[in-house]
Length: 341
Ligand code: NAD
Ligand code: TYD
Image (cartoon, rainbow, N blue to C red; front, top):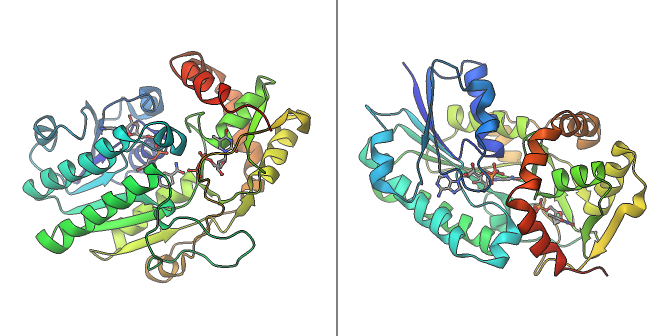
């Protein structure tokens, strides 16, 4: 009987992983560990709540004592998604990022080692590499320097180093994945795409940071989740694997595409004061993952935008409950000080 433990499984990518893993029979038993922070939502796990192999534990990964019993008689693999994940929040206050992403990861690594976990898949981000110049053709490889800009990216970089240290020092079987920007259903509406889509539905301004020329490489969460599975199946211990969508787009262009897909005029796009130290461009070179894991990027975002918009249109209750709750205070606080440009 196979047993997996998934941290952060009530969040955007973690819940997608859990729904897919149980839905497609990747594993017999799967336990989710999630502290249910503002970003964690049990509604995201509703489709698998009654699955015989599913268990949920409301546990904070920084709490080693609470974490240890969750491992029960042992687990074959840990998939570590739990993190504070939003750059703007990390600029506002970095403490929770250090606590969870750095401290929590170390606690989890220690418990995993003590409990003899088979493989530890550490889910990281291309943001650890820092920023690329606009207009250049350079892309991040797994050996690019680690030069994070934001406190979020710095905390993820630290956690990557700690995971690799556990592999090198203690022989824990660790594989690290670094993926670029994800999009898809159930993404918390503080992130660019769900924020713009849901604001468009509400005929609210779409707050575009700075000149809007910043470039991100977009991958569907479905493709990311399948790539994580590949890293688990075929990755080598102690190795890092990059995943990208081969889909570099300027924010301005995506904002316009969202207006078109949601049938709102483009003058809803409102330039606002830029994010501090806003990384200009991310781009991933996934040659190693293609060669060693058989990874392939899926169709570009334009082919999936109507389905994406359709999901948020059909799940209005899901995002309205978020936007009307505590998140509303965050939005008013963060965006009232931004002003327009
Ligand atoms: P998310 O913010 O949607 O979800 C994070 C989850 O972690 C939430 O369910 C939250 O409750 C949980 N969590 C936070 N702190 C916790 C703690 N101390 N203990 C237990 N649970 C805790 O994030 P996401 O977008 O799904 O990202 C998941 C992972 O993927 C993160 O590690 C992130 O760095 C990485 N990643 C994200 C992207 C992206 O585009 N979203 C891209 C590459 C990598
Ligand atoms: P985000 O979804 O926060 O992801 P990340 O910063 O981790 O890449 O932002 C994606 C891009 O969209 C980024 O260049 C910042 C920009 N952005 C806006 O222009 N307006 C917004 O309100 C937000 C949240 C992001």
